Length: 618
View (tube, rainbow, N blue to C red):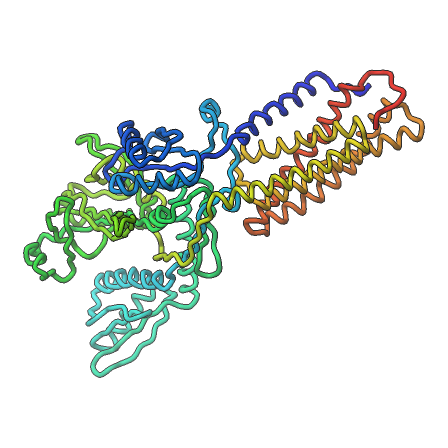
């Protein structure tokens, strides 16, 4: 009696071993580190590692380790945060034009663990330190951009219907069109509102001119603002993920703000560079009729704009943009089959594909240019300190003759290196910002604060665990020690599951762990009290053990299910910290059901199952 079959014992042992292995990486510390990536046109290699080591040795900064990471990054490890900061200062002063630095924390786990995918669980901003940024989205600019797009389409619609207008321009939050007579004005308004029913139209007359004032309806304005905010959140999240920033938290705050939290990141300048990056492409026709020499002297033809190629040669392009970065649905880096040069393969959405197909069909044999637009950050030394400045760069990277019409998929060449092609593809794939952004609040939380939180949280867990262990051992004796063992196992399993799922542990998560410790032992208390009752009414020890587990099971399930419902509601309707608490609590409930029922029963079966007993140490 009270014996598990062999397969069940093997299953329990297997789960315990897997949990121990998954939780193992969390025993290792995290080193203050510097992540180095190459600046534009610089590739990180083994020679770069030697170069960085030489700079740190010259500056007298001890280095724990430096190694290539992910093929194109260097990770330099230091013994403490002070040496980390000194190392960054030395690298910035000597090699700021060649390498970009970012402060981070890197787990000091053995290579064999990382080779098989084992890693410690992620720590949140309140534990690991990092950067907290509040971004304001310029929603008024989003409305202006929408009006500008409408303005270009309006000109095309009136031109296609051969309706003559005197002027058509944006004035504030309105588009104002003037006509020679009321009949032409009414015909023009009818054409414009047919394809845009949400436009609000007001007509008037001024002398011999007849005006039509067109503006977006309040409902349309709200939709545009909401879309711009949500699109910016998506773009920032994709951009941060694509550039390798770990465990980001990007969420909406109020009507026009976005909160970005990056645990482990310690370089606000690097964060601004990532969030403000606007690398995108524009495709424009080359103005072959205008004079480039006259444009350089300041006489730019109407409808054209002066640009420069990467070698410094001026070129005149049409102002009308064929396709922009926000119409790119996918982008991938590669190499051109014929020339072998770095290339970005571009896919357009339906509207962009139609415009590209129409434009290339009408202009076969004419040149088309690709304009690369980027916010480029440079670092210069001012009074002995590195100062970063950002400027917008617009370069013509490619000019090619349109040989035949094309639409949704094509390739763009002219990039300097495969690294630039890769970065451009990443930014294009993550999308363009729908509205300009401005950082209005910025806080950097140091690792020391995070370590204090970790120490306090760990202390609270140990105090709670210790008190429970003492009480169970004194009150339930051997059975209580078995409950203590499965309680420790439950804590190990929670950590293992958090690490395996890639979840992020925060202070509320630690609170969930402490609560789980108290709740996990409840199941064993119910079982042990039921066993005591069975012994008091005269049942044998073996029968009491079996009855205790069987009769307490329904109460344990009811208690855990009701708590699980509450945890799911917290996760569904709570904010970030509340969600972290709910996730940890949910995992703890599930693992405690397994450890308190199956694991404790297996241990008791191993000690007392199948034996003739007169008493039980409970």
